[in-house]
Image (tube, rainbow, N blue to C red; front, side, top):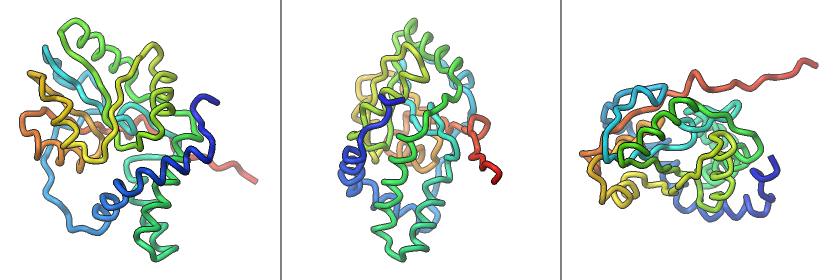
Amino acid sequence: MDGLINSGFKLGLAAGAVGALLIPKLINRSTRKKAVTIPCPVVNNFADIEKKENCLYILDIDETMLTFKGMGTGWWKKMFNKNLRETNDVEYSGSLTIKQFIQAITSEFPTGTDVEGFWELHRWCEQSNGKVIFLTARPEKIREITENQLKSVYEGLNPEVHFASDKGTKLKELSKDWENIVFVDDKIHNLTDVKALNPEVSCYQFEPKKYLTPLTHSKR
């Protein structure tokens, strides 16, 4: 567990460095009108994802590969709105939510989603000239924590992790030399952004609900 948690100083730096990138997107998603979304197949295990040869599989991390107790797909919106009600300051609420997110994912030990299904996909890639990599909106300042979390849950994995808040643009950069590309994420806005810039990509929305662990409160 110690290897997963950096000092508070490092976490503060991480939140500050990524704030300028993530806060505008967080604010926009909470205040903008409902955007047009592109429907994608919904899966809750990796076996339901089409297996292709010569394929780059790009997987999200949080709520796709890893889950944390008490955190789910709606966590960001819930926390941001709570902070906004209490502070009435949009920018500060965004910054505070990012800090709370980093604190939450570095103070809890993660659990995996479909661990067995992931390894089946990974083995398929090894025998079909494919590759699995990861694309997360986490700040790159916590790269070491992120990689260690994946390694702790998916033992034997040597993860290639990429960091970007704009997943559509980053995916285009990562996939330019590949014949087939598959992208898996739990958040529809990421899937929509990716599909808008990369219409050739096969996108899947991962539904993590059955893997989530609710918070439990002890009786007093």
